[in-house]
Image (cartoon, rainbow, N blue to C red):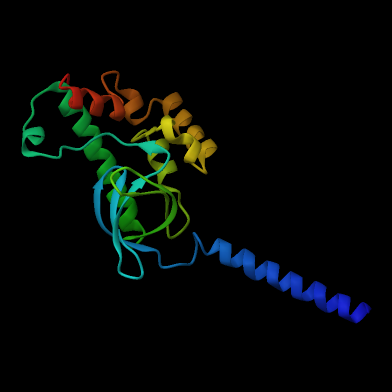
Length: 191
């Protein structure tokens, strides 16, 4: 009986270790999804290991907008120029992070949005949480309307608070308009 108990304990221990490693593999040691394009500061076009292509919207945060049309690119409005300037900085930083990871990211998909994009927490191959980096550097803001769907909500709120306290990125700019407010103004024609 004692021998059988030892075998069961050894088997259970080995199973727990294997399961633990498998769950860690979610972020570390996998090849990840290939980033085909950094669309802006919080959206990626990716291809998974099976060849499926889809767009990923970052969970938990909202980055400043980039111009989407020639009219927007040519705009001389101060509010547009300010938003697009910060949007370009967020996009460039995200491109840098993705490149640093060999154009591969590990996704923790939490939802889908109304545009059919996957909403995900995004990590680099080394485990770096991309949303945390962008928020800590003041290149994005926590998107509170969907924070309840954010598994790392405490971490992102802490990262944002740190940037706000240090007046980094958009927190240093008194003329910056939150991206969700900017989109609302554009939609209503009030920008």
